[in-house]
Image (cartoon, rainbow over all chains, first blue to last red; front, side):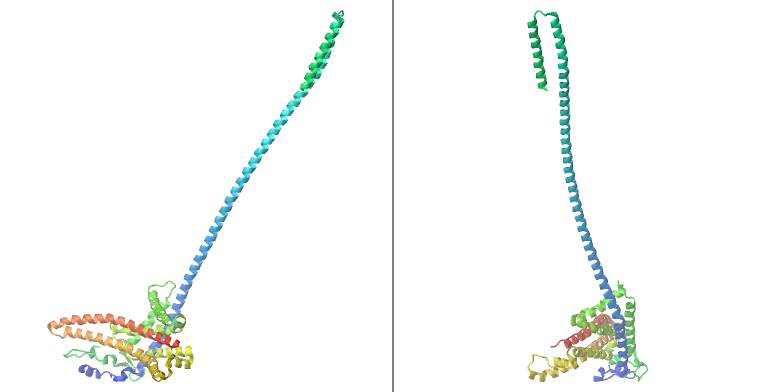
Length: 189
Length: 262
């Protein structure tokens, strides 16, 4: 140990006691310069740069999250809208179907009514035509019967004048028969 | 370093001349320059260059170097400043605390860098200046929070104490707050680095002596001392970071104590 101190003594001076804790002026000066440089670099360059980067990153992350949330909300709104439109479309379809069914049954009922009307009308026409023809037949028959009767009468008169009384009875009866049958025929009309 | 070792016989031991090397240039002026000053400037340039380079290349999506730098800066800002001072109060002190932490660490760690081999914090200048900065910071924080009179009252006359006790309490508070705080900050840092360096030098010298000058089987003991030297080198790395952390944390705590009335 003594050797070491002796050896070193020539090259540098080791302070004693309290002076170990009191730096020489040049050391204070040099250290101060060193620390000021470090402080300036951190204060003016490093920390502002990193703070800016951190802020930007936080901003970016928060912005991204906000955008994602907005997109999700938008998607949900769109989904709800789509569901609503779907429901509306279904309701619309059901309504149209219902209307068509109602309309269809109305048409069927109308057609049926019209058909039965037509049928009734056709039947009536036919009956009327038949009645008219019978009337006409009756009229022409009556005329013909008159002529036949007259002819028959003349023949009877011409051939058997002797039995005049019987002859008139026959004629009367004949005419009555005709009359009766004509009455029956016209009543059937 | 080996200059101090004795060359002839006897176990070599390091001496305090380790920490007071001869001047290299400008001897006798305030620009005097020795080995430790040189090592200090190398550490300063390394620190500044490293952070400058990373900061200049800072991107939104960090690369590997930027991630590491951000972890370091976040450690000081969040785990020291904001945790002790609270988020609002921390902001103005973050630059100072960050500077302290990284300056102390880089000036410590030169002790285990091969070729530099001396922590420049093992001489008193830098620890003393940093303690002075801490002192100014916590006094200023107290004055800002309570005013000059208010700060002196809250720190020297703690409330809730019967007034006769102030006769004892106030001198104790004066000594502990305004003298012991900066002194302990200085001595803790300096003594830790000084002791660590002496320990490393001792082991390396012993290893050297045992390998080359001891006789026969005693040489084998050199393996042991070499292993110890390696272990203490790793330990010094840890101590370098720990001392930086302690110094910065205590500064933050002192600032906090000044801000809060007690």
